[in-house]
Length: 628
View 1 (spheres, helix red, strand yellow):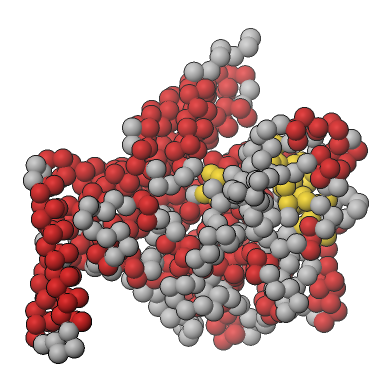
View 2 (tube, rainbow, N blue to C red):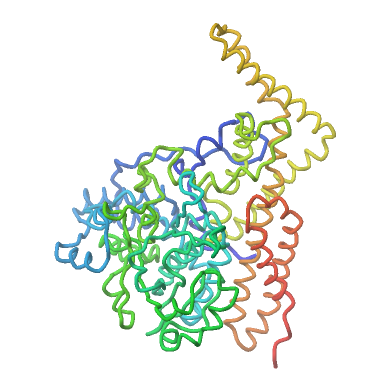
């Protein structure tokens, strides 16, 4: 196995604000201790509003901090300390746009009121930390792909393939409880979740291209620039959402290669057979592509004839302070943080693409505009994390996004318990706590894989496999498990019924109520609870850890394959057996997952995506002999 990419960033503090919402930990230690073998919930992050002054070059100090840790908390500490040190030691001020410069930018890029505040801030904003952390995440992903030996178009193809491996198609059609709502979340949220819509795949690709220093764009109709993100795409009969919807205003994502644009279809996971210039010159050349049943994006040949490129960049990238951070910390971080909007636009051939950044101004009431690429991160995050979501905890989009990664359909609730009742909710919380701490709390296994930390990810996942397998084994070996669960269900349902009767009595005796509550508390500490948590989480946890371990092995094989395809002659002959062995290892891991995939029935699209990757592993594990 190869060594981890960027070993100095392996250990990143967990973050309280990134912790699962309170519902996941409702049962507390009484249920979770021993249930999953997981680590304790993360500790709090220190308030960094008042940063201590640090001796030494402020930029060097910030760079050293960020070489060690790159999560949101570390970025907040580094930027906060940098601002303090610059002010107290060097009296250096951060650059800001002059009025003429801001006017010129505003003519080029549509900016909401919040956007304008973000761009013109005279110091680091609350969201700068989140933006920096996101860029460092994608920097690690880009570095782990090791694409330096490939031409720009090949780098784009391999980066796009990585996005499609890491994000399988499944739209999240929910906004604060509305099943018909459509959202488009920021790239790192989509990557940590592992699934998304076609539009979200585009977002991840744009963010990855930024770190590869390739110019990306979105392809839609001439009026796409005025449309909001996250529009649901339905079937012709209006009875169902199309796979990978919401489409939004765009049907392709592009990469500038010289004077032309290479096109990619995020729903198919493939490059178009023609470039943008070729499509504009002769749309009929792609007629079969658009007529193919595999074209599920809803784009037509008529759309192709009107194909128009649009630019989209994170709003923070337009702030001069980000350009200074990028320049000053280039040797330490090697991260791309800033865009010159005019220079980016000028790099494309005529007609120059416009910028797409719809907002929720008073005359634009459609809330889906908040999910435009430029400010999708701020739309997701609550105020205390630098976002713009002012909703109370529990109903904030960020909280809903976290909960929906473990849908209720995943968990098995014993017979005799009302599915939507208090007991079922508490049991789900216990199981979700075990699974959430293992697979959602960052840095989660997906993040480690995506950042190229393969050894850490594999070691962690093997431990998780053993943990959840042990939970399943406890159930198998305990011949009385069924009886104990049934006995506990009868006990606890009876106690809750008794509590209900006591509380309905207008003349109830407080001591009687307290006694029943004490019995309920004792019931939740009995072994039967542990067995139910094992029953609800062990199969799903084992399937998830096995899936992610297979994905880890698959990414290692992809790296071996890339080295082989970049080599020639004797070097290729030397690398070929290594690549084949890596694919055989990956294929074995996928076959192991197949034995546990049934537990993923509550996660639509997950096992289907695994089959696609397993098929590629099978093909490359048994390649045809090379041509002489």
